[in-house]
Length: 202
Image 1 (tube, rainbow, N blue to C red):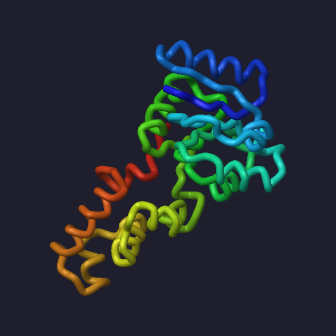
Image 2 (image 1 turned 90 degrees about the horizontal axis):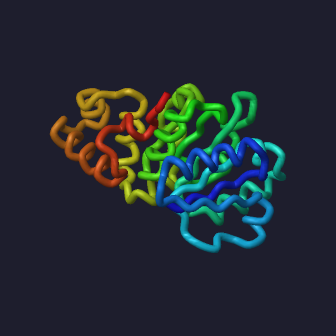
Image 3 (image 1 turned 90 degrees about the vertical axis):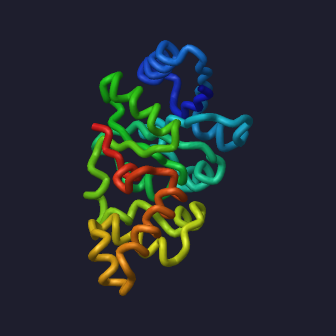
């Protein structure tokens, strides 16, 4: 597992790196600060990026935009509760997880596995961030997954808690048609259930 760790070289970071190295025998980890990574650009492909929220919190906002443009692999953010991690989620692409920096080791490793494999993992209830569950997914995400306009509309209804029957009534389509749309959406998103999009791995 090739891992990029964006953070400062300090005891906390070295401890996290040590946990990863001892838990994944074939792992290789590159530690870089954000400025250096942005300046040099991605020099190789990584399976996962782990970003320390402390360095994001102190970085200029234009760094977040540049960072987002350079990262093409799933990212796990390590944050503290008082950091503006919702802002990080909105400004950074490819964030698949946000967990508390001081999480216990088993939880941390579980989050790495989920994010590395393309899943989503949060220490907090992500639904509480916005008025509806679909808010964390944006039009770019829908387009990248290849969803049609109708599938996007149906997905938003599912994430808001609507049932097949309720959606079929609202759209004047049969439940069988809605069920077929649901299967296509899940296949395109690469998940078995809509709840997997916002898995709270507490």
